[in-house]
Every structure is written in structure tokens, then in C-alpha cells.
Amino acid sequence: MMYIQVSRAVWPPMFELRMLTAVSALESRRAEIFPPPAVMPWLQRYLSSMLAAENLDPIPRHIARLMSNLTNLVTQLQAGPVLYKKRHTLALLFDVFAVQSEMSLADPDELVLGYTQLMMGFLLFNAAPRSIGMIGLGGGSLAKFCYRHLSDALIEVAEICPQVIAVRGEFMIPPDGPRFKVHCQDGADFVARNKSRFDVLLNDGFDKAGQPPQLSSRRFYDDCYASLAPQGMMVTNVLGGEKNTDAQVDAMRDAFKGEVYVIDAYDSLNQIAFACKGDLLKVDLRTMMERTRFIPCLHSATLRLIAHGIAYARDGVVTECSM
Image 1: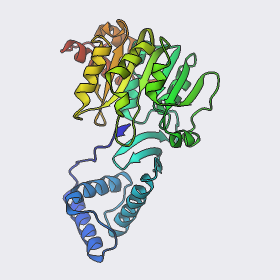
Image 2: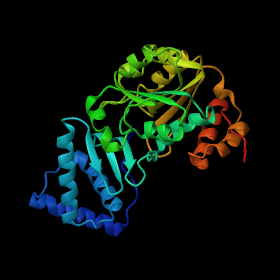
Image 3: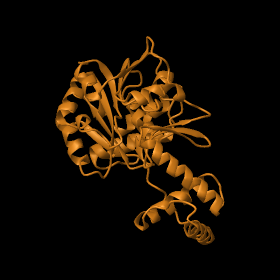
Image 4: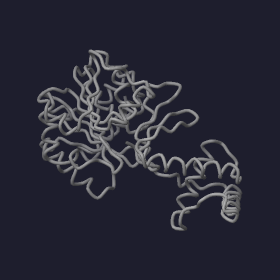
């Protein structure tokens, strides 16, 4: 799940003036239900971002439509996850602040969200895993990418929410078969029942409130460690800046004997933790950079970013290493 940070871009003065004039006109006519004054700065940034994204002028008609869409979205989200179609993508939302998953309509197997690209950084350490476990299906971005590009891997996914599984067809997630299976199961139970099984475990389990407690405890990470084959790797999406994030990462480090390194996502508030059972992460930067040449399914710039991020998290300093 990627938590949205509404753009704080500095808009051209005339755009801002027209925006404020249009909002004031709607408020004076009571054409839309506006939130309390404390929320208005966020709402105006949200509306400005949406107008810019859709290349719309800041006039009352367009703002009223966006406000109506937002109101309908909030109402629908009270009943559960919602599909949200934009011009080029289809998203799965848990609330208005969080994109659980996003799919390109032109290329359904593409990794749209930056943090999912970073999670695939495990390919720098194991380019051909035979068994992949996943916690959290969402819109299936990671599952579809692995299914398409890692044809020798057996993939099993634990998703606790039946409503999420029910819309898998909308996101073109493959049906269950010999290579791929989705379990309606709590991720904590999933790892507890699979010992020494996975070469790679991708942990992206969130609900509306964030990461559930059972997916961030020391016991959970002990079970994740036990679920990995020798030289296995766990990659976990965590929320940077949250009050319990440091404790969560400490629990990982305790379970994985210190072999945990965290890098920041470049397009959201997320952080990605790489943890290994063994010494997979002890690879030097030059070797990681060399390996970026042989992973065609991810952009080399993304792989270099991951390599430098892990090297810095591990060593505290990164010397220049161009390959």
C-alpha cells in the first residue's frame, strides 16, 4: 500500500487565484458540501493536484465535479475497498489517502507504484527464485509481475480480505493454477504454517488502518524467518515516519539476526526493508551494480538506486561505483 502525500507544488499565481475564486463561488452558492475550515487547505491542494493531473481549468464546474466524485468515493469506502478508475490507471483504494494498488490500463503487468519496483530489488540477490510467498494481494501488481517475469517460480499469496480477492478479475490477476494460488488467509497464519519453504517472501499486508499488529510483531517476523529456505529473503513494505515504525524494524532485526536494511521509496512515504536468512545481503556494491545489467525486467536506474540504497544502509557510506 502506498500512502498518498498530496502535492505541495507551488502553482502559478493566476491558477491559485482562479482556484480560490471558484471555491469561494461554490461555497457562497452552497453548491457543494465543504468540510470544516481546518481541512480546507488539504482539500484545495487535493483539488489542485487533480485538476493538474486531468489538465482541467480551475473553474466552478470542474471543481464541483471533483468534489462530487470525492464525496461519492468517501461514501463508497465506508462499505469496503473501492475500484477507482482514472484516465490511464485503475486503482484499489482503502481510503482517500491510501492507494492500495494501481494498474496501468495499457500495460496491466507494469509496476506503476515506485515502492513495488523497489520491492523487486530482491532480484539483485536471487534472480531466479523457485518459490515466492506473498502477504497481501491488493490489485496483484507484484503477483502479476513475478508471474510474468519469473516463469520458473511457484507463487502463493495470502490475502485476508474476501472483497479484495473478489475483484481480482478486474486487475487481470491470473487464475489459480499449478504456478499460482491465492489463499484467503491471514498472513500471520500463512507464514506460521509454511516452514523453510520460500526463497523470497514479499510482505505488503495492509488494511484500512495501516499495517495490522499481527503483521508487525516479533513473533510474526520469527515465523517469517522460519518460513524462508536457507539463503531466503524477506522484503517488507513499511510506513516511514509512523510512531511504531522503528519498533517494527527493530523486531525484524531481532528476528533476522541484524541482517535488515531499510531504504526510502522515492515517490511516497513508504520504506522498504530487505532482510535475509544467511548472507545474501553481504554483496558489495560493485557486484550489485554488475548484476543490474542482467535483470531486464526492471529499469537499470531503479536497480542502481536499490543497490546504492542498500549499500548506504549497510555501510553508512557509498563510494562512487559506476558500471
